[in-house]
Image 1 (spheres, rainbow, N blue to C red):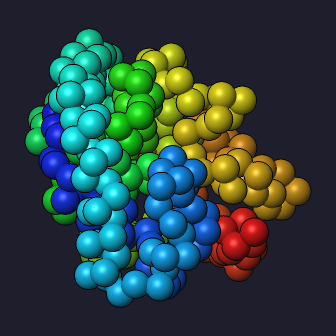
Image 2: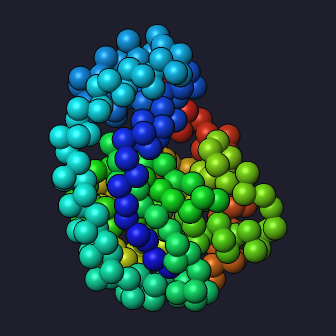
Image 3: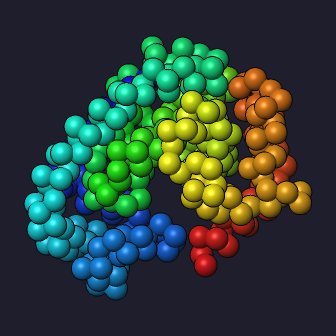
Length: 260
């Protein structure tokens, strides 16, 4: 497993941003943009159709992009060097976690450095976005989160033989994949190089998972206990069974958190 960081250009950033500015996007996903780029008028953007949104964003972000392009290009070197410093350590930890040699899979992952403060990942296309304001340590922490998704679903698919279409939001399989990151990240070889671990440092999963209480205890603690008791394939089955049992409560908590 290896990540190579690149600058994909302004248009990629705009396309990425627009994924979270749809009518269905909750403020949890959409409003981060306006925090980092107050030049963008939220109401003006919302009133436009997609081509209009793209044109509006281009008119504002083009100047910003060209002003920070040297910084973006400089971070390509920093991010790649920092990842390579820990590549062996990361592969050792993930190989143990997933009971598979990660050195021979996913050596073509790409981290696109862009202006979108929300960082989506694309399983089939094997790339994910990294916000340009991230330090090299922050970029690595985010990348570890995303890399775990790629390997999780690789092993998961080999176990359940289902469709990659089921691995996206709002599927329960997507929800589970977002939560289990913390359990896997608890390995000292990973947690020690992730500035967002543990929860007191911000956490390596979405905040609403950190506050989710199921059966009277944090669901992340329950998943961590299951992780320590079972090998990865048994953990996948046991954790998914637990989430299916409590799916209504899990979805209700997410909905309330995203719509606050």
